[in-house]
Length: 276
Image (cartoon, rainbow, N blue to C red; front, side):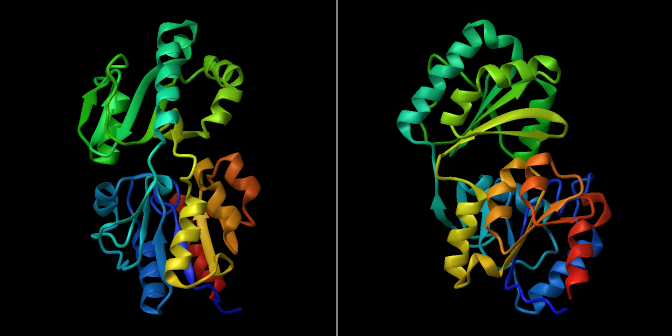
């Protein structure tokens, strides 16, 4: 068949990384072989740049890196920010207002915690919850306590709402569906914990992929992209070939043009090797 794509865009958690949060030797060797053949490999993840470095050791990437779901695009793994997408001030104030309403009103039953990701680290309503420790280690950031009556003034990348892992979650999502659409919210999971994430209306992996492709001098039709979550949907839709992992959620599976084996079965390398 022959491999005719000029770039490979790949998500990390649930896609390139296995359940132990490692890149398998098979995936590592496969991607490095493409890099050695002058095929661009671009990481596209919700992680911060520091956290990415911790899990991609051995991967010879020398291309831009999409971090924080497109909110921050770096020119390289060790480089500067090419593009930053922070939440607009007006939207930021509206979200903080919603946060206060949720916590002070009868919707509190569905929300366990609220995290705010800023340019200088995380703020958290309840910093001592165990799932927050897992989340902060994932992002490699120090967590400070969030005061909704005196919210942080610095630029904000995203808001994260930890939902109760039961039927009450569905009721909350249904009640707040219109508001969440206005805020460009996305439902996601991390280590089994259900979250709602709200970021800049301009930030998503698809828009970030378009930006990086222009930088690389290629078109999105020349891209094969791999992902597993709702935050990968725009990227999978715009790529020449969008591939969802077998463990992907329904949103990614619905939009993808093909399906790979799961992240614990070296799905990325297995699919790429079959295209050679």
